[in-house]
Image 1 (cartoon, rainbow, N blue to C red):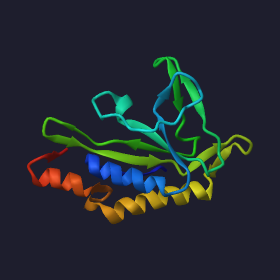
Image 2 (image 1 turned 180 degrees about the vertical axis):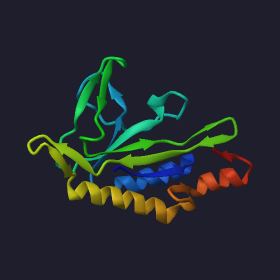
Image 3 (image 1 turned 60 degrees about the vertical axis):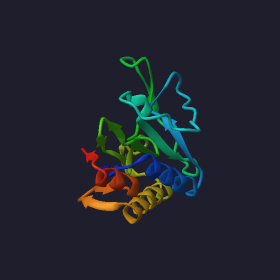
Image 4 (image 1 turned 135 degrees about the vertical axis):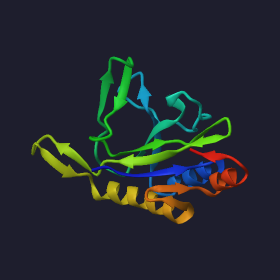
Length: 166
């Protein structure tokens, strides 16, 4: 069962989040798709738009020793990361359309299929602990809205000034 949190992040909230991530070992941001099976880390996130390529990314901590599992997606004519088999966190960014902020979130599978044992195995403790630290940072720094939904200070300001959290 994957673990996840939903959140609303303004640009400032996202910058604080990324600054925290940089303090957690050796993290990299990977694009959702790649023209080759070698996913090159990106240095800066683009402006979020309706194009999924600007909103969906993978977070990887290079200190976790589990290989990145990629596969070719013919319908997209590119490679994608298998989030179930890889030690990655799916990162969906919040973005604003008109005066409405759409939710983002983080999600990660804590197990993977061990092909030698042909059974589910837990991902390494370093990965599980890293994901827990990310969740804890969000819980500590963001306002708790509902069961799994949090609102960053900047997104809360957006809402207080008449913006709609959707």
